[in-house]
Amino acid sequence: MFQPSPLARAGVQAVLLVVGVVVAGRALVVLDQGAGVLVAFIAVVAAVLAPIGLDLWAVVRADREGITWRNRLVSHRLPWSEVAGFEQGPTTMVLRRTDDRTVALRALGLRYFGSKRLAAERVAVLDRLRTGR
Image (tube, rainbow, N blue to C red):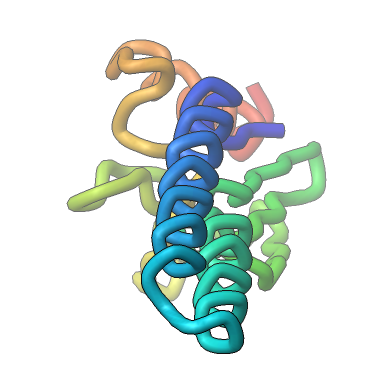
């Protein structure tokens, strides 16, 4: 199973929560009681839900039969017979299907823990599963 680094997920979540709490606190001070509570609630909820929109919970799982990936909230599965390979996309690694369509694998960024080498090793593991080596 591959997913964004735990450090990246925790760091982004912490920053978003701090920003949400600061915005919520300012809203309570500046706005009237009714609107301030609503703005504060919306800011904290947005900070908690933002990682879903930022693909921080994206996952790639693979076994001998095929590959499963989740980008944001939707999961997909493909058998290896429908996967032509993997390549580097503009912002993340992509899966190339045999029908020449591509799918962004948001859990497989161009770097892992800041390392391009570790990111390439993750893709090599998937490629070995795909080819059965």
